[in-house]
Each structure stands twice: as C-alpha cells, then as structure tokens.
Length: 564
Image (cartoon, rainbow, N blue to C red; front, top):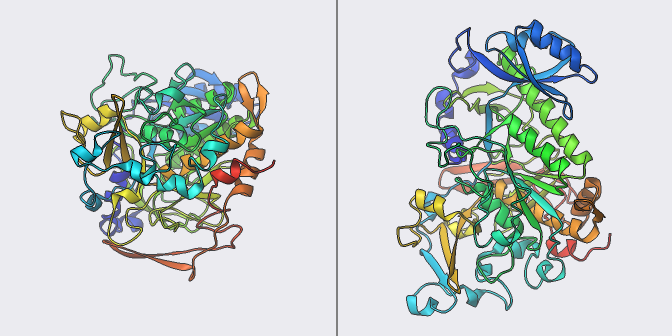
C-alpha cells in the first residue's frame, strides 16, 4: 500500500507532536554498538582511493565502487562510522543504504466514493444492464472511457487533438521510476517494453524493527517480475503517459510511445536511495528519453544538511541524499534523459517551509517534529535539472493538496481534486489503468470481477475486460508532462543507436514554450474550503511564471503542432 495516506493521517496529530519542537531530540531507537550497516559513501572529485582508505580507517569494509556517480558501497558500524568518515575531506556525503522514502501518491477522498455508481462499461450491453454508456460522452474515434478523461481534454490530448496529429513514436522510451508497471494490463501491454524494463528492488516483508512492510513475498526470490505492480501507483502513472489507442478503456497523453518499467519502489510504496540511483544510471546508459519520478527519495520529507535539531549522522545522511541524487540526475541529463517530477502533496509553499512533522519515516513511526527553512530540499523535485509539476483540479485551479512555490513550480498539469466544486466527487480525480490483482487484494472488485467502489471502473470490449481507478495527486500531474515531453521528442528527436534522442534543455524549452500561461488567482491569497476547514495559499509571480502554475499548463495539442 502506498504511504501517502499514512502521511495525511500523521498531519492530524501535528498538535500533539508540537512539544517535540522544543526538545529537538532525534527519534528512533538507538542501535546496538555492534550492529553493521551498509553505506553509500560519495567521494569528492578525484578522491576515490582516499575515500576507500577512509572507509578502512574508520573500521569499515569497501564492498563495491560506482565510478559513474562517484560513490563507494561500504559496510561499517552503525554507531560513529558516518561521523568518522565525514571528517575526511575525500568524503562529500554519506547515506545509509536503506529504505529512505515513499511515492507521492494520490490523496484519497473516502467521502466521494459513494457519490457515483459502481461502473462497468461494455460496448453492446450498457443499456441492457443499466450501466453507463460512456460512448455517449465521447467523440467518434475516441476510446470507450474518454468521456471520463477530463484531464486529457484540459491539455488537448484527444482524438481531435494531439492523438491525431502527434500520438508519439514507438522509438521514444519513457521510463517510469515507481512501484512497478502491470505490463500485462490489456491497456498497457501493447506499449510495454519488457526487454528494457528492470526491477531494482527486492521485497522486504518486515522493516528493521520487525513490523510488516511489504508483506509476504509473492514470488520465491522476493524479486517481483518486471511486469508486476502490487501497489498500482506506477501502473496508473504509466497509463496516463501512454495507454494505447486500441478500442479499450482510456488513451494516454502519448499513446504511441514505449513504456519502460524502472522500478525503484517497494510494494509498500517506500524507496531506497540506491535503487533510485541505479534506475537513473540505467536510464542514462540505455537510451531512455524521459523519466517520470512521482515520488521523493528520503526518510526525510525535507533534506537539511545542517539542521541543529538533527544528529550529526542524520545531517550526513541528508547530505548524502542531496549529493547522490544530484549526481545521478546530472548523469542522466547529460546522457539525454529529460527529468520530470511530481512537486509534492503537502499543501506547502516550498519556498517558505517551516515545519516537517513526517520525518524520518523509516523505520515506521520514527517521525518527529522539527523546524526547517528554505535551505532544506525535497528530492528530486527541488534538485537541479528536474522539471517539477504542480497539480490542477477539473476547474483548472491548483489542487488544494499540491505543493507550490515561485522557485519550485516549473509547470502544472491535471492531477485531480475531488473537492474542486460542490461537495466531493471521485470523478474529479484522474482515471487510468489499475492492476486487477491489486484491486482484488484490496477488495475493490469482488470474486465476479465487479467493482465494489466508485473509484474503480471496468471496461469490457470484444471479450477483453480491463480495470481502471481514479487517483488524485501531483503523482498524477507529472505523467501528463512526461507524455507531452514524449510528443516533443517524437517530433524533433534525432536518430540514435537507441532509437531517438533530444537534448533535455531543448525539450524543457519547448515544454515551457507550448504551455498555456495561467496567472495567479485574484485575490492572490486563495482560500480553499473543504470538509476539514479552510486553508489559504498565496500565489506569487506573474502570468509568465508563478508559484501555482509555473510557466503554465502543459499543452499536448500545441506541442503536437508547434514549430521547433
């Protein structure tokens, strides 16, 4: 299960945790002095040998070296090892090689689940069974569920828009760094590149304290196949990018491009640092053109290199995350990978963060309250070279949950917001493919395959049935931008040994140039009202760039026709 709902629950306890602000005591149980741990030791330029010597001098053992990103994998004592290495000028950062983050998932809206009927759509039997005939809402030539895809209409990714003029090229490879992709889903399989897909994680049934994390392994090796997704998050993202036009379900932004699973997230929705580094390095070395990163890598929501409320080891770990991810992102971008990220779902002005109440999130229930400032970074959304995307609801307003910031928001895209209007409606979220086995495991469909929640839609055409779910979040916004980037690369990329390639700087420039400019609301202090009360977000900047919408809303139709 994705950990986003866990964080939302944690927000409700903020008042109870506030006392921790004055204490400043790091959370989590102290480890035994004899416990060993694996570390990623990032060395300064030209200092590999000295860093290896420092590892040995500190009582550790070098296990391997990654020269592309400049780090040593080492094993050393849990207590004192990081602090000892930090004193050596050869060491640029050091981070534990452990689970340190989670996917930026959808914000659920339970109250909305009863707002619309449970739905099964068939091409011939809708009237007979009393279910909705979605075709009545679609344009000739569109997919059966296109009438539910308000998000695609918002950006012009429709049968009368970019799907006709520039659906994308199969040679363009879009990597989804996430919880996996259900490569056998009928509305993903035609565009799924199994040969290039990789899984960089191994399932962990329990965390380091013996609490259930991923749960029992589904496969003997605890290594899921490359076409598997227990969470559903990665499959939803992939579907939004490139579900094909095949007469079934939905179509993605760029229905003609190829999808590559670069799994870096656990079944629980948590992420290790090293799998993220491995995924980015692999993308760079194998001709991936775009990667979507709808998550952040961290046990810390914000990485602070010198927060006095953190221990020295914690400061070093956060520094290692910032340094390590930046090196991986730089390496990928240098090799032609355009980097897209979700900005985050905490309703925070990232230029003015004040409190982090959710970190560290591993081991489970280790979080505490700490004051932070703008020197603290959310990674990868605030890393250099990354295009960060905020989320919009169906009305076009910034979603209430979406983070924002004049320095941080690059683009905006539909991500869904069930409360964007009167009451709460789950159909205001984004609809995309969902793994059938995941829905069964969660009780969202019954033994007969019938949806048991308004958040799930089944579409059956010509004897084939497929499932889709409504989710909302900046996780859902980012893949719209990734899809538009794929359209641009399909049109303007040059042939390469791996298919096509296009400098990320050119992709970024055209993404911005084709975006629909959107000014701050008036008044700029926008009031959001919900069942939980009201909140005020202040939009800074001009129409050409502001904290809510960045340089504008991604526009697939314009990207499909713009001259270079």
